[in-house]
Image (cartoon, rainbow over all chains, first blue to last red; front, side):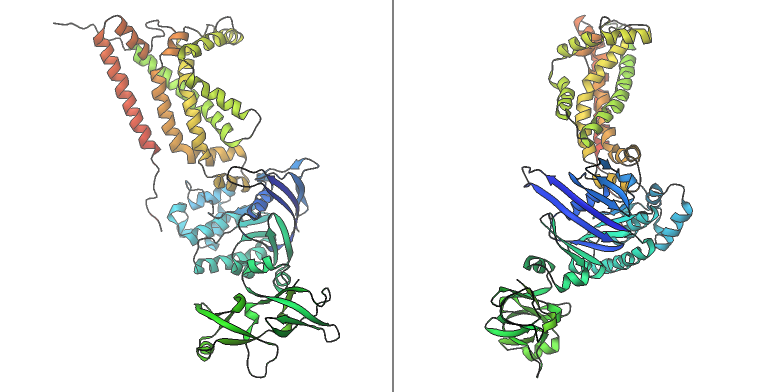
Length: 350
Length: 229
C-alpha cells in the first residue's frame, strides 16, 4: 500500500511567470508524507497530478498497486476513478448545498453512514447549515467528513490549516492524526508550516524548484538536512560557517573551527580535513553552558525578543538560542553568551 | 378628432413566441458552447470563438444573406428542414427564431463563458475527486453556481431577441399576420405613416426591455450570506 509516482510536467513561460518543470519521483507508504518547500516549488502541482486534475507530460503513477497514469502506455484514469480525497486550502465545500447535502453528494443513498460521520465530527446540529454559515474549524471538519464518506484510497491535503488560529489547527491535527489509523491509506500533505510538518509527518519530501532534493523519514531528514537551503527553509536550525580542522575516526569525532574557536563534531567519514561548510544544529539542541560542560562556543549577543517558549536570544552569525526568563535575567547586561553544542546533535553540511 | 383603428397585437405575440424559443435555444446551445470554450482545450478553439463573435460585427444584411444561402430552399440544410417539417424555413416565423438566435447568441456565449470561468474550479475538482462524472459535476455544481449570472444573461438574450430587425426582415420577411414581428411592425407603421401604432409598439418594446434589463441587473447582484457563525 503506497504511492510510486514519477511525474514530469512542463509549464511554458507566460507573460507573468517563467517556464517551470516539475520532475519528481515520489514514493510514500501508508501514513502521512509531507511535501515541504517554498511557494512555487511544485508541491500543489504534484498533488494535482496525483489527483488527475493535471495531466503529466511524462511518467507513471501507481497508487496502492493500481495504475493511475502511464504516459508510455497512454493510461490516464479520470479524477473520479482515482478515489483521491482532496482537501483544498479553502475546503471547497459546495456553497449552494447544506453540509448534509455536501456529504450526500459524495455518498448518495447512504444516510446511515452520513449520520454516523456527522456525529463523529460533531456536525449533527450544523447539518442543515450552508458552508457560509460555519466557522473555519467547522468547515474543516465538514470537509474531512465529506472526504471520509467517499472512502478514498489516497488523501491529498493542500495547506489545510492555512489562515486558521492555533486552537483550530491543533484540533485539526488531532483529527488528521487519527485518519491514517481509520483509513489505512497514504496521505500526502502540502504545507509551509514547520510545526505542521513536525507534528504530522511520518516522512518528509523537501521540494525545491520542481525537484525532490531530500526525502526520508521525518527524523532522518530533520537530523541531517542535505543542504544549507533545506536547513534554512525549515527555520529551526542554527547554521555557522565551519572548517574541518581534524578528523579522528578512532575517537569517532571531528574537530571544527568556528568563529576562531574549536569544537568537537560528529565523525565525518565522507569529508576531508580542510573542507569548509556549515555547522548545522537544531535550536532546541543548543543550551546555555553550565559550569563544567565541554564543547562550548562563545558568541556575541546581538539582541533578544520574546517567543512562545521563552526569550529568543540572537547572537553573531544569526545564531539563536531560546532561554528561560530566569536564564535571561542572569544574562542581562552580558555581551557574550556561552553555549554548549552536543557533538551528537551537530551536523556538518559540506 | 382622430379616430384610431383597433391595434393588431399579432406582432407582439409573435415577438414573444420568437423570443421565448430563441432564448431557449440560446440557453441550451449557447451554454453548451460557453462550457466548451471555458472548460476545454482543443485545436481550433480560437477560431470557434471568433466565428461565434462574428455576428456581432457583421452587418445584419450580410448575416441575413448568409442565412438565406445556408437555409434557403435550394441549400442542403433547407431541403432537410423542408423534408422534416413539410414547409420551407425562409419567410416563415421559425426563420425569425433563427434570426433572433443569431442576434442574441454571440453576446450570451461570450458573457456566459466568463461566468462559467468565474466558477471556482476547486468546487468542480472537489466534485470530480468525490467520484462525480463531468456531466454530474456540470449539473450539480457548475450550473447552480453560475445560475445567477446565466439567468441574468438569459434575460438580456430575451430582450435582444425581441428587438432584432435586420436579419429577421431578410430571412423571415414582413408578412402581416405571419412573420411580422414587433420591430418589423414598427418599421412598417412608420413607413405607412401610422404614428399611433408606432408609438404603442415603441412604448411596449421599450417598457419590456427596461423591465428585462432591471431584472437582469437584479439577478446579477451577488448574494451575501444572511448570517455567519
